[in-house]
Length: 274
Image (spheres, helix red, strand yellow):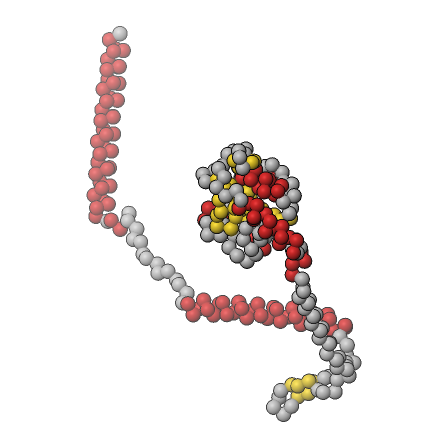
């Protein structure tokens, strides 16, 4: 037993000494390597030598581009030659040469041409403008002496009721007038029957342009985007400023100048003639 313990202790001591010796050797090797590197640094460091970049001068680039262009032109010329050779069979060889070379070297076409000159095409004659219409008012309602008498009679009857008060739904001088009741009453006195409401009265008769409006025509008004809501009787002649006689909610039966009124002139919807 004593021998075994002694052997173990000796083995343990030998391993510890061997490890200690290895550590000392490692330290010595590291120290010697550092000193060697310090004395000869060229062995470890590599010098970087800057290699100059090779750049082609712009003239060289231009020469390369010109050579490429020359090659392209040659290829195109070769292709054209091949096409011309292929088309050579379809060319008319017996066709006479129509060009002549002068002393100055200029090539001019010869005058001996077998083809006949084609005569110039006659120019088309201008179409006569349509004759002016001797009756410019043919498309408009015809106006004769009777119509003038009718307009005068309408105006005379309408002026009899100036100052009559406005009453909504009224259609007699004793009761009062609204706008459409007034026009219906006046036209009935002249043997013309009108509908009761202004928007229905607008469907009667023929439409007339404001420049052609005359005495006895009906003029209708409406706000923008709304239906017809007012009607009056024109008492001015054609070519004059538009004037009308009508029944308004604030005054009653009165005369208004439509052309000079910004309110009425911007709300004209339609003018009709019976």
